[in-house]
Length: 394
Image (cartoon, rainbow, N blue to C red; front, top):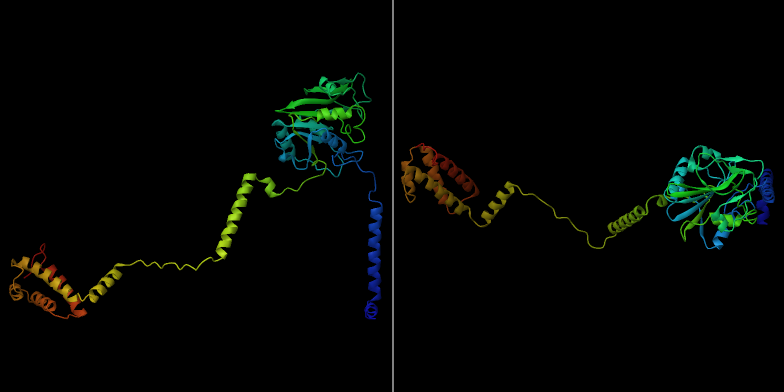
């Protein structure tokens, strides 16, 4: 009853519109599944494709014959010495699935071939030939296949005796110097030539080794002979990036491996440092307070030490004795002369009173701080008055 009451509360107009929209979307989905393709698919020339226009049969053939094969799904900049032979099949110019190579991709591919790589180029691109890319020869259409087929000795030893060509297209003989491996009177079909330290082998027809054609005649033997790696155990890679298969490029795949490893170690060190700083493994350390002592602090400390040792009277007595020695030298009297006689020899009354006051302070048994300061001041004044380098004023 509760569910029925809830359904009755729904607005009828909005509910009807929602149901109609869901029905239309479901109908469109079923229609798309029933007719997924509106027209025939183009030949992909991809080693992933097992249909008639793919190259899956050639990939499987090389794999079963014991050749190391793999699919290369990255830009040519990632080609290195680990790849011995690269199979590059030219896609249709109007194929929307392809990845159009950039100038950097073309430059990287040429650099890899110049460094010693082997390229098996299947197809024809007269625009690239006109621009001088990889020194590819230009192609031309012929009305029909020519008589007197030609098969090079290397291919004849591999069992290739006939030339099967799907269309009437041949490489043009011209300024390019290349060795003809397969052809007829109309022109060469398969040529090879050096490019730097590497080598390029060009097959004019990209449909030559399709899945529906490779079993005809000697095409399988021809493909096997052309795709052989240059060194035993070498890797043969099928370029799938040009056909639209591209692995995502991450930053750790772009930087050098040594840099990536060092960066990982640095990040691990930072994480350990942060963990150690956040977690306390012992009591907190209190830094020792640093105080730079001045001369006033030294005097205060020395005075406190003297005061604790009751050395005020001894300091006054020492000051009075040293001052008496200076006065005795100035008056040409011995140090043991009585103070009264020193006072009698001093002519200036003010100086005489200062000397007698210093002697009285030194004889006091318990001098105060004021007595100590006054006695030191009197001793300094008398020393200046009776200094050996000065002239006494008495």
